[in-house]
Image 1: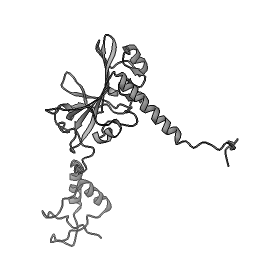
Image 2: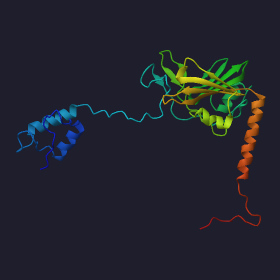
Image 3: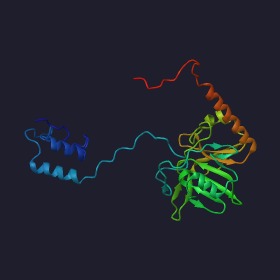
Image 4: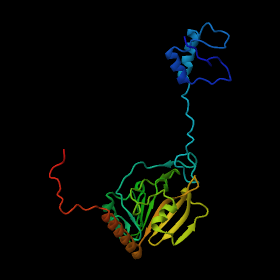
Length: 280
């Protein structure tokens, strides 16, 4: 019968995991021992019973941590350290565009709390006289005199607030983007391919919460970048403010994108006819 090398208590040989012991016992492979001084027989029934009992009682082996760091984390947020963090999973809410100087989707500056809730399709999660917040959707509306004066949209995982016990409540996932397709997590160079160079860059020192390191100011929109564990800066928040010039520029850019998209559509020949039934 096949013998298992390493069954003897040899410190230079690897230890058997409980799962492997169970598997080998079930397969009947623990029948001999090379180099133990007894090659004529394997473990006795009593020894096999002890091995099985030990394997069942031992805790399961913990797999080694992967060498792949994944997407990383903010430089001053070490996974597993600091206050507990409460994450919001999944996506919710409409995929509104973030339009510089204008607002998000149909929600424009000057909108009331009632208008916000109607267009968002849900009441504010946190509401005061000066704010309407949707933490699970990553949106904060700042109010003055009952009307929206500022809109802040944050990436998923940024700190939204702290509970009484000190736990950090994180923002959830915002489903929209800056037209044409600028998303949270993008590098400054990628964003500037569409928005151009900022009017002003403000370094943040010391680094703020969740790696907040730089503020890039544009007309009608301010971008906050977070320092990441891989050495990069990633888009972490967008602050929209009212600006007629920015809104006009955004409308012009959108019209140009629509025109280019229409030019790519190949028209049908004038003498062509559409099929009256699907082909076989």
